[in-house]
Image 1 (cartoon, helix red, strand yellow):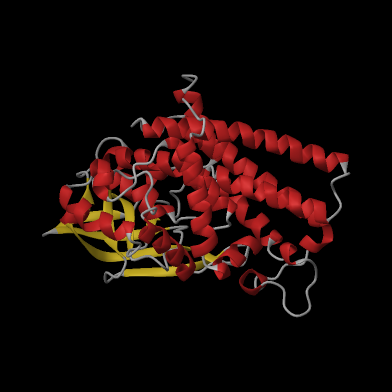
Image 2 (cartoon, one colour):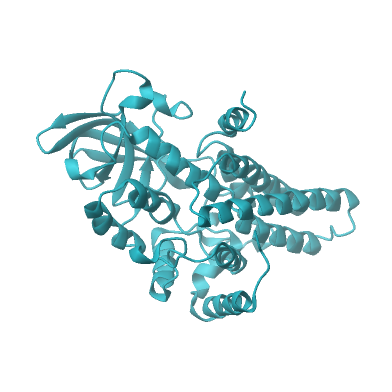
Length: 393
């Protein structure tokens, strides 16, 4: 694995920096830099900016409109996006569903959905977890009964991120009950405007509405929205979760958060606090080790290999590091992190600020990152996967 940057790679880095410096909207940059809440328009505006440049899907094959970039170039791109405080590219369509459709979807499904995903014309959400079937996903109970021309789907999905924005959901449903639980699961694409679909907001501890419960009451889904055939949902789910867990690692974003932490620590006069500096140094070493693991996984992906056990390593360590950074940010600002008002996530402090601008969203960010070790398969489950796949236990 050669990770040396060629002259062409460095020229590409300069091109990305110039593009972001001149084309990236300042208002969205300000929101991300301060940790303020983003709306759907912010995400879509940025993703369409990348689309017009031809940079929306660096890892997609050229035949589907992607860039088919090298592992090194994709690494540079993600690093520069994070350094410029851009919004996170929503992964549900571009990074999660798209690889599924390219691998398991029919030509008709690829032609129908991939161009709209690429252009951010459709917003997707993921229908996996249910009340009583989160970590034990194979226990899901949402049922898809065969009817003329398709399926009638009934059940509910839980913790569905941005379902209130979504045009479509990719969902795991139960189409059979014989044999192992996993054998009766199928993968469906559900139009969120269909009769019988309703979304109930869930406001989390950080005060934001990001996740939802989705109710499906006799929703009719055409048969051409079944991906991979009946009973293939578990195979597809494992494939998709490998991509999700790799993305959760968030190395580039954590590197940017570390830079932010150092700036805030300097502003707070902590550069001479040996205990605090020791914590920062240890965390930076952990992040560097994770980065090299991420690069190895990226290289494997570019060679055409599906994510393996290293995806679980990335998920575990990536989320632990994200949580540790938010803890140190809270320590750095001290008492200014204690006042918490969900309203500051939209506008920052009002005319009577309690502390520095950078302190306003830190408590909410700390609360929010508690969930990262749970979604995408809990860290405890990832350890079980590693025990089996790596150590044969």
